[in-house]
Length: 493
Ligand SMILES: Nc1ncnc2c1ncn2[C@@H]1O[C@H](COP(=O)(O)OP(=O)(O)OP(=O)(O)O)[C@@H](O)[C@H]1O
Ligand SMILES: [Mg+2]
Image 1 (spheres, helix red, strand yellow):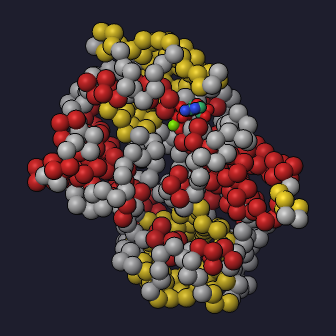
Image 2: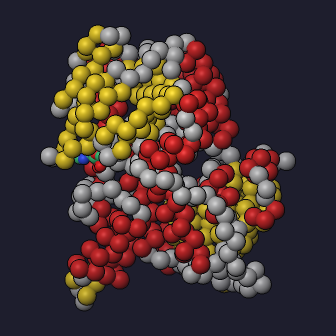
C-alpha cells in the first residue's frame, strides 16, 4: 500500500498525495493520460525514485524503499516501459544480469542460467532462444524478455508498465493466461496500459490518476468503459474509433507500389499498391514480416529482390536518406530508440528533419521553429512544461508523440507508420487518428502497420494481411465487418 505519496521534479509537482493499494491475488490497473504520473508512482515503489512525502506499507508493515535493492528485498519487481535490456547481450545474459548473487560474468554464461531461461521462455510460450542476441530481435521479443527477466526473481508484487504495447493479440493472450496463473499463485500485480479492452479482461480493480492526482478506484465489475474514460480525460468521451469513408481514386498511378519485395528471412514476397489519399492498413502477427517490410522499403534493411515504384517510377532505395529523397517517411515501431534524441529538447527533436526548410540564409529562423514546435505540441497534446524541455524528462507516451510530430512536420509524400499510437492515451489517440486522416485527405499515401484491430478498422481504407513474409489477403474496408475477420486473415486462412 502506498499512502499520500507526493513527488516533484525541479519544483513541478507530478504526484500530489496519491494513495494506492494492491492485494494478494489481485490485478490492479493503474490508468491515466500520458504524463499523469503512473510510471513515476511505480518507480517510487520500485526504488528508482524516492518520494518527497508519503509512506509505503507491505503486509501492513511500513517499509523504506530508497533504491532498487530495497525493492528487491521486499520482493517487488517491475517491467519497465522503457526497456532496460542491453542489446549486445543474449536473452539469458540480460535476464540474469541484475541478480545479485549471479552477476559475475562466469555465471552469466552458466548452463544453469541458460536452462532456467529456457524454462521461463517456454512457460511464456515465446519462440526465442536463450542465446539469441537481444539487439537482433524485434521489439515484441524485447518485451517478452523484459517480462521473463522480471519473473526470474522471487517476486510478490509485480509491476507491469505497458507490457503489451508491442505485442499482438496472440502474444497478449499468452501473457494474459500467464498473468492469470501468477494471480492464482497469489502475486499482487499492478498493470499499466492504455488499451482499454485489456483492462476489463484481466483486472479486478482500476485506479485512475489525472495530472498527478488520485481520481478514483473502482471495482472492474461495478464500472464500465465510459466511466473509466471519463475519469481519465476528465470529460465525456467522444466517439473516437469510427471509420469514415473518404473518397479517393484507384484509377490513377499509385503513389507507392511495392513489387515482389524480398529481404532477409522475414520478407519473402510482398507486393502492394497505395493510391494518393489512401490509407492502407497492414495487419499481421509478431514475426509476420510487417515491420521488416517497412524497414526494407525504407532502405534500413537490404533488399534481396523486388522493385519499389514511386509515382510509377522505379527507385533505387539503398539507405534511409535515399528513401527520404524519394518522398518517404517511416515512423518506426521502437521510436524511443530509433526516433528520438533523448538529450535534445522537444523542439530540437521536432524540427530536426526540417532544419533546412527553417533556415533564413545560414541561420535558423528561431521564431518559425518555435512556432512549428508549439503547433505540434498543441496538436498532439504533448504534455511538457515548454518546448525547450529535455525529451528524456517527458513521460513515455509523450516521447512517442514527439517522434510522430517530427515526421508529420516533414510533410512527406508517403508516410509509413509502424504502430502509430503505441503507448498513447485514449484522448490523444483520437487526435493522432485525425491527423493521419487529414494527411490522407491532402492527397498523401499512408501505410499504417498496427496490432490494434480497432485502430486498423478506424483508419484503413484497405487492409492487407501478412503471414510468414507474404501478403495472404487483401480486403477493402467495406468488406471487413468484424475484428474476427481480421483475426482470421492474419492467421493465414
Ligand atoms: N526525471 C524527471 N524529471 C522531470 N520531470 C519528470 C521526470 N520524470 C517524469 N517527469 C514528469 O512527470 C510527469 C509524469 O510522468 P510519468 O512518466 O509518471 O507519466 P505516465 O503517467 O507514466 O505517462 P505515460 O502514459 O506517457 O507513460 C510528466 O509530466 C513527466 O514529464
Ligand atoms: Mg509511463
